[in-house]
Length: 233
Image (cartoon, rainbow, N blue to C red; front, side, top):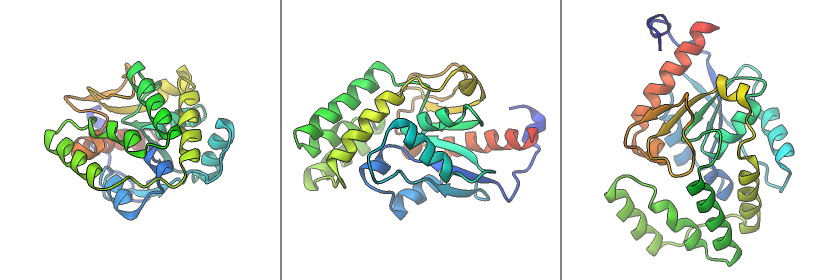
């Protein structure tokens, strides 16, 4: 970021529409997860959380539903799968992607296909288990394995989740060069789901779980992105 943008204060009226990751269609966001996302943003930013539609729909209908939910003056920020959707919307307006990118990596696509297979055979634990390995911290990986062994993950509607995971794979690579050039991307160096875009802000050593394991790094990057955006406005 240039020195001029660093001197520009963030406007107190700044609004950000947040498109959450796939965990929000596995199970609707609760207040704890909303608070975790809120901590990623500067304190004076007003967040508007976008909810996924409850019924199955096409990718175009999903995109239109989300666009209709975004306040006209809001900055768009998408997390993980939400970042791919934000990039589709960014054909007409800039977007911020967090732990996301313009396309899934080969590893990411394989992980999603494994999730679909696990849910099709009714094995919710097998669907959730690979997420434990995403953490950089050995302590968090151990905690996740213990928690998974003691408590079966709750999923609102497995058939709906399968449908949304398939939509995620269709959403891959649909952003476009113009949208990608205007987007700001924050991603961990070792993200297991997404290819790293050339213009991304890469956080060293971090994984797809960057927002959970290093929220301060995300918040610092978001603050500079939003400040630079305000300076250009």
